[in-house]
Length: 186
Length: 75
Figure 1 (cartoon, chains in turn blue, purple):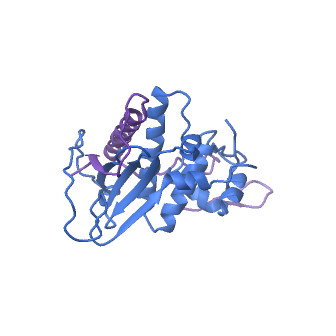
Figure 2 (cartoon, rainbow over the protein chains, first blue to last red):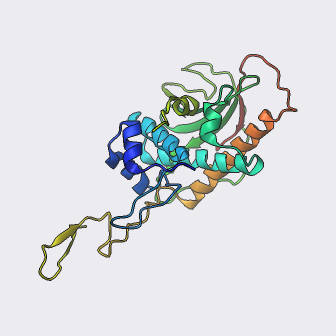
Figure 3 (cartoon, rainbow over the protein chains, first blue to last red):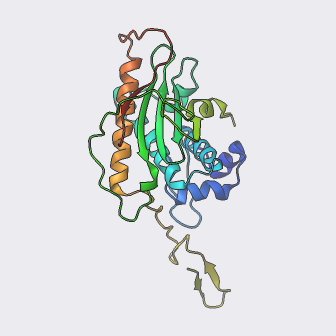
């Protein structure tokens, strides 16, 4: 696995190092190849980390709270781990950059609810959610059902519509396009 | 919190709250509660299962208009 330093990631993404460090300190991005342990030590990042940084920075520029960013990155990371258990050669960055890649998107409905959308080239799209991210940072988060109930999808009567049924505002970010846009050559 | 560390015969060193005085970096903040993390992991596993199912070569999903289907979520 190719290792990237903080300085290299900073140059690649054209972002100052302190913004990347902030995401690490908050636990939104966990370095795959070594966490800093103290003065003089350094973090080591994988290409998956670079995708996580690029996605996190995009979401931050859209003014989404860092808790939501951390949640999105957590889902992405866990998704890749589960797929890799079945397909040991799976690499999320390589997969999303491929010619027939699934389009994985993040949707935010009316500034309150988080969805994930999988768009396949040759089949129906799949919508996952919602997650009410107003509850993420609560001091005492509400109890969360272990089994997520299935929701019925109704055609929106008014508002912006979309598969998630946004009424007044929606944010849509393509993780696939972010992965494709990475210039990973050094 | 700012901690000032004095070494004999040397200039005082200011340490911010990023690092503790012994030089050990603070652990990342716990932004998300264990309950929320469990929910996120569960959602990720559902997405992965659907991804694997639909990308399986034997699936043979028809080519046609994208018709979203809600698979799961928190009500």
